[in-house]
Amino acid sequence: MDLHIDEAWKEMTNRLTSWIDSLIVSLPNIILALLVFIIVILLSKYFTKLTWKILSKSSLQKSMKNLIAKLISVMVILAGLFLVLGILDLSKTLNTILAGAGVAGLAVGLALQGALANTYSGIVLSYIKHIKFGDWIESNDYEGEVVDIDLRAVTIKQSDNNLVYIPNKLVLENPIRNFSTTAQSRVILKCGVAYSSDLEFVRDLVCKTISSHFDKVENTKEVIFLYTEFGDSSINFEIRFWINSTSSLEVLKAKTVAMIAIKKAFDDNNINIPFPIRTLDFPENFKFNKPTNN
Image (cartoon, rainbow, N blue to C red; front, side, top):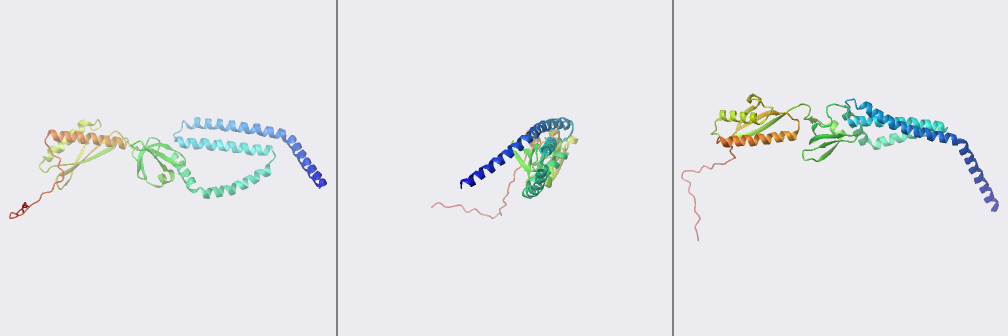
């Protein structure tokens, strides 16, 4: 029993001694590898800042610039790792790592299909010019200002100041309504007047009122006034005019100003905006049965 213990102890001692000898022999390479790795980390940070400086002069979006800077940083670090493994004479380990990375990459790709789709969509959205920071858009039944585009989602701020995060894949695959592609927006307002109203006077009054309350509308020709139908209790009309804004909130504000101004103008000129009413016609010989008190 003691003999086996002695042999095991000697075997362990010999192995430790050989490992220490190997470590001492490889110590210069290890120190060099550490120095190279530190230099690579510093270089990756430098190239990231340099990339940001170069791309700051381009028209690419912030998310696209961030993605390019990160990719260059990762490439520099990977190149440094390969160099470190070569210094440590671990070429066989490098081949094993590459083979394992291929299998692991396939498994990860299958497991993260949705995330990768959003990442790809984020890259595309960052590159195209149809949507950018500050635009007022409508997508997937949500409307607001684009405040961020990253590799996962498009962030929009609604008119009530709430943030909505829409996955990039949904934004790319569904229609996008961009209100900021033009410099102006059209305001459409519907109303109605009583059948007894002078329709020509109403038309001229509404056009004059709108022109006097908005800077963009310089004359009555820029206001489109259309009578649309004979309603149940009113003759309905529609007015259209432009404002110098692409924000949906500003359109609502302009509509509010127009409604207040039109209502005041109608009140000053005794023009009635009727509400739905119902008239009951009774036969001439119709008799009301009065309730009797018991």
